[in-house]
Image 1 (cartoon, rainbow, N blue to C red):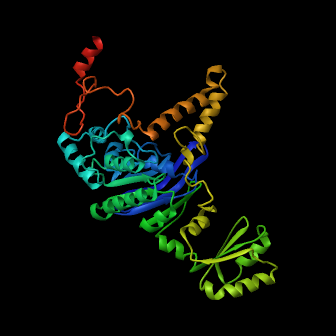
Image 2 (cartoon, helix red, strand yellow):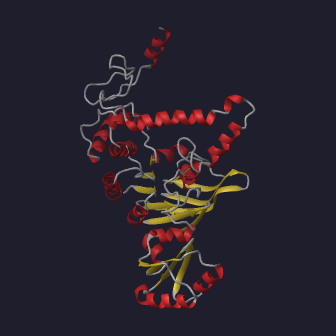
Length: 410
């Protein structure tokens, strides 16, 4: 389904966001793609979805080369981003109709698939509701439904459950597992929740600093560390020479230190724990706390990235950042710096003005349109609307170009 061979992406000469990565995702897989902020995850997805061109290497999606046939690639996948990609000023049906028209689907097919999708996501009869009035969980359902309107073979999910409550998150994954198991859809997933990746992924790839560190099944990656993990907390980080001595001990398959915590991975941890503590005592080491546990996916992530998932800004906006260029968005920061250093005074307030504008629009979209009217402010009546709605499901009739031009001349 996805074939990436020796992919390189440079934004600045000599600075590689992706450095010679290769991976293959088979049809029907749920492929988890993990990495800290700035690792290159979003850059990879933008290349796979034809939003960025690679510097070198070959990439095919659903059998189509992204450079030679980008249109066929776009027709083959659906995309669900961190931000919900719906127009809150339109109804559920109008959003789905718009998406279907963008994929050049006949209206009859769109209507049939709208009914199928609304039924699948337990939203039958809600096609006429304003998207801005829906809860976050319902918005996410509609977001996925619009991404599936053209029956894609592949679905990209960029942190799809971020911000959802536990029930909405569980419901969403029930729908996605249905699509994967029953429909055979391939899922390419990045997630803020390691337990999602652990439980749902067929295989996982871990990316760090533009390099693909490891690919394997979740169980294989956890088993590579050992059967058990001993978590030790000391008053201060261990000295390099002490850590080197511990790593040479035959008991341990892996030793990882992060600040004051040291993790020892081994087989038969319950049996060896007393001996380990006695041996550490001979080195003059007394732990403040000791915990024996099974290796988790956080341990795997820590091994291959050197970062604790829970302590890192894993839910941040990646190397491209959010809507307003915040967080670790190094490209937006570079642009903002140039704007603020502009010789013209008009650019000096650009960052503040832009941020305030985005915040106003974002807050409006997130808060809905209020409980009184059930429709967005300044919403035109059916008589004033440029494409009057039909009475059955609020479907949109697109304006006639000649009538539109005539109206403008008048």
